Image 1 (tube, one colour):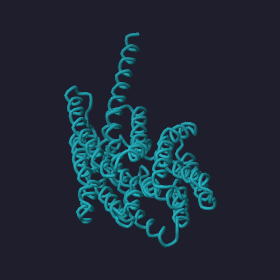
Image 2 (spheres, rainbow, N blue to C red; image 1 turned 135 degrees about the vertical axis):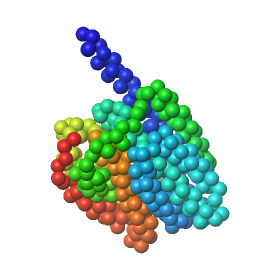
Image 3 (cartoon, helix red, strand yellow; image 1 turned 45 degrees about the horizontal axis):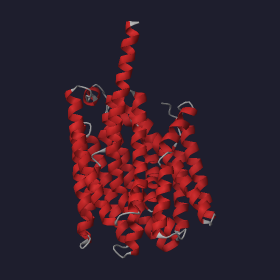
Image 4 (cartoon, rainbow, N blue to C red; image 1 turned 90 degrees about the vertical axis):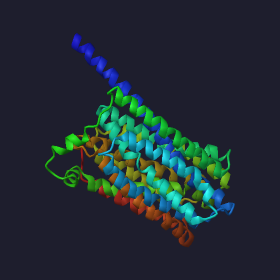
Length: 404
């Protein structure tokens, strides 16, 4: 009886700890994606107002993605060596500074490009150390739910920006995003210092890793990193680049006004933000088997893209386009919420997460300017066909089976 009570107290404590850690991390990650979604959402207004051209905006996003991707590779490795409180808080605060001054630099495009690229690099200091913090300080079941909260926060940020975009000027959104990031950076530092002093969190990755005889690369390859590298590139292109250009797609291809496009994008973002819950439900329904889960996600996305390519009517077209993004993001969620936290015993959670995010955003950085040029030369149907081919590649890469 006594042991049972102690076990219940331990479980209750672990639940509360996971809830607190997950909440703070999700709010901070919401701030990250709030700031990163601003440019894509206000791009129709900026293009119509001749503040920037589509090519310039594509260049900004490309440099941002490249810097973010490169930073993920570097900061993912550093995240296994430097405490998350330094990585996360520094990234949030410096990202806030860059976001706030970005709209002040448009009189010189090269300065604006440099600031937005720097913003991408410093924001790359956040995600991998956050997953490390969660996976090493919460029980595996709770770690999955915490990562779902991160995923939901990142997807919910877009509709939040869309709502404010209908009320505020485009440059005011960047200032608000910067203030939100900086304040979250200060709060996260104080929060993690408090948890460390109470000995609620610890970092065990280095001790675990020194016991491994194989190198880091060999360990990750054995755990399926190559397969998920392909999936990261495919879903990253859809999740980042296609979503970035979605407001412009709605405005140009479906002939809605910029303001209406922003509202539609907001509603779409709310729907897309639910993919983390849908993917987890499907994964558990299929008895935690990754291959059928991923295959269903990619098959649904491919079928929806084909429908969007052939159906011209705006409402059905929009429905299938959102369905394609939703299904692709479900596959993406399995990677971030199940595969990455499942590497906790390797001691390489931050390294693997940073590497996969690097692959994801490198693919997005190539796709973003390519999509803008393809649209100008061949139209949106060509972009949809390319996305369809990529999704098929992701489906093939889902083999072989890997059970959790």
